[in-house]
Length: 509
Figure 1 (tube, one colour):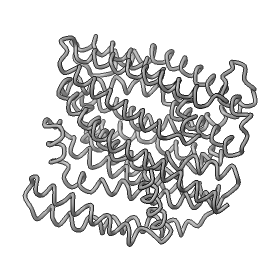
Figure 2 (cartoon, one colour):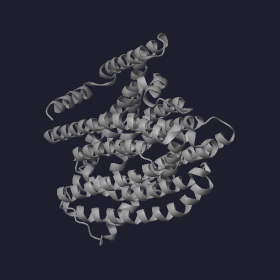
Figure 3 (cartoon, one colour):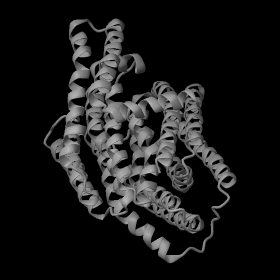
Figure 4 (tube, helix red, strand yellow):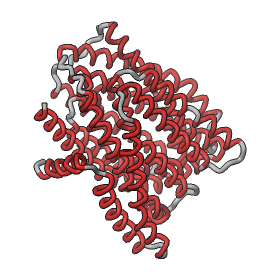
């Protein structure tokens, strides 16, 4: 048992390091790509693309729930050593995804087009380009939905190396597209949408070929057991509520901002979310690496292991985001100017607020993965999803009263705090752990580490004039302050040993 746990820890460490290699590379390339494509499209077209593609995302809100269900059921069967059942489960998952892709097309080509034509604020001369990009976004969405079972298979088997390499290929492809768009003579927005769709198709084909060769035990059949489909749909139906809440929180609010302020504010919000996505990928990669182990441990009824991963993963998620957020929050203006050159209005405050929101949400990533492992997600999804859904009506209400666009981020932060409290209470009802210990060892220590990490860089920030020298000093002070605070205050003995093993694994990869 101890040997198995050690091997599992090594697997988590190795997969996490592979994902971090992928993350550092993709983060650098993605941020540079954003600069290139913003310059190529212009602020207005950049905003149009993001809000139009966001409409499609609204109708594919269940893709997150489908992904969660697919990963959970495949990982659970692997953890139970029920390999003979895998093909049946995979067939059921694939059929469900096929059906829901048809649903997306139906909604996107009716209600979606109506929203684009009648509700969005788009300059008349860009309507045709917006329509073309919308159709390419719909096609890309369908291919993405059909790729979910393949991704779930790879993640469940913890083959995250290929996942990392494919992500690298994807960002290189997007950078290449950005350069092509820059120098082409045709409508830049239309070319951008067309080439992104082509890239999605190519990546899907590669994933399909890889899965067919590496996992021959998965054989698709259109005939699937009704009981399996029923179980997956039951799990999915409750995940759907939470997924809808998340999409309305993000893309729904994006549409509302477009109605009140136009595409320029959408561009600012898109940039802030790209910065946030780069930082947030630290914690998301850790969750991706740990989730299969949490599900498999629960399938083996090893609750002690599940709770160990829960506490450790939650703490690590927060510290990883904190580590990167310090220089970005303090030096937002300088970073954006250096990165973009041309910084749209509101971007600075949007970036700071969305990172604060993500720091709060980072406490919940492993909690969500743990709840999914239990399969008892009904109460959790209904409560958390219900609270998250408040984002859209509250944002609309305050914008209607004449508040600034950043009020939507403040609302999201307050709701995130409320959701964190509810999530901890609901998870406790499923697994029975010490809430007091969670508050003291996770939340309390995290706040203390945050305060200690910011002291030195903040003193430098207020003592020097803006410029490269201050930025460099803030970065160095942030790294040193965060590392010392996390290592000696945030980590206990077991966490320090785990990190040492990760470093040892890295040296042997």
